[in-house]
Length: 582
Image 1: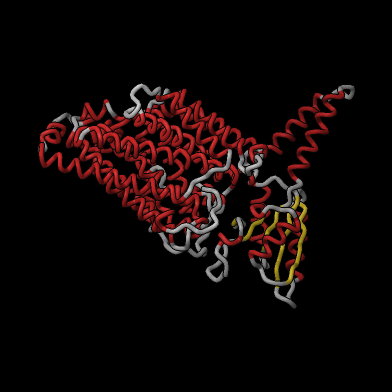
Image 2: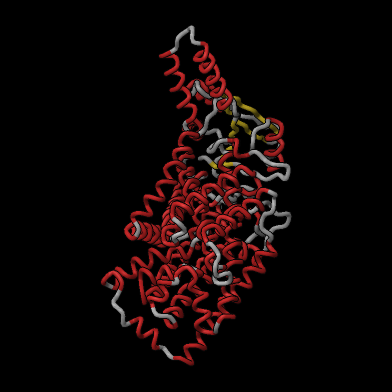
């Protein structure tokens, strides 16, 4: 999730609430999913998920600590590997936002149906998605105070439900729990039940990446605390709710009420008033997760569109300053996946889990690349190699388990993933495709055919306009090998034929003759890129970067630096979005 820029930095409670509403809402449906696949051992599967999430605390802490900028897995891979790999993470993140919006909206309306019995859930879900689309279009984002209120109310509701379930067990005993444990083990064996239960239960950590997407809006030192707090909430409540559900409700009843399990539990342990309270809580916290998805996807799409990965028409703003086209397209995609899956919770969860787990695996890979390629980059904490590899293997295992459980859902996932990644690949390779089109026109060109002549000239103008975007690389090192890597990266990842290489020296210093000579050699080696060398005197500061961006009309995200050492005086987030490429 990437909220709109806030004037004041967020503290621990506000940051935890914004991201916690997303991840803690999963307890409303993940317990039922775990019971469907692990039966009486669902709570153990959810405890294993808590262990995996504990490992990811360090992984996220290292990556975001070293690269403290919004963007999550996309930002991690953009600054450690190629733009195409980062684009893969962006595509998967977009799908996960889409699926979580639909799941949350659908679940919210399923709980609302306990209050309004004849509510048409599918139509109501579409209506809820439309409401939040409208809110985003008119410029209303999250309010940290509202997020805090929802989060506290949600945790209070879970504590109340758990307490009354405990009192119920003291009064009625454990007969239901023992009866459930006497049932045959799901999938025929305990290891398989735990494997498939763990795979389904990994949906319970959806939203853990949320805090990484608005780290720039948090006070210093808050981010690792949000990871700890989310881990505590998930590790305590998800297994506890599953355990208590198995203690007060027969498994067949849990399975038949999977879309509103907590409300049914509330009614069982204390009556209709608690069921009503849980339903109201569910509607609130799940609706908050829908808003998170809309605002988050707007921020991510803006970021990747500015990096020229998606078509620029998405950046059109209305008078309120919101990118309304992104919200409209996102709404249409959400409605389409809702209608395709017919609101089936397992299908929606399967699509989301595949996307979400793929993003988590890529985040782990980003950590590996950070350790190898950016080993000198300062970071507040480091994950161990063993825990990193175990976490990645666990996520891949869960991904395989979900695909084995629901092969049909993989097909639904691919129906959205293939067009998304295809569009991204077209944008990444658009100049090559346009040049291919030019060759075809030239081959079939009839001199009399004015239409083809105009098309030929028009495509050439489009290519020129794309390649006219200038890029900047800041360097002070006399290192021709590093500059060669920079030019290779730009040639392979960016559409440009203009590069400014900028060196900032103290007064009285200047580039060596050998450095200038090396630049001339590189200019000849890369004839498709026009290199302009600029020497400046002064100090390399965030203010200078902003000044040069305004002066040259080059966005800061088209400016690059090498990986700074621990002696570099400025945190990366203060540089305004400058990218690391070597």
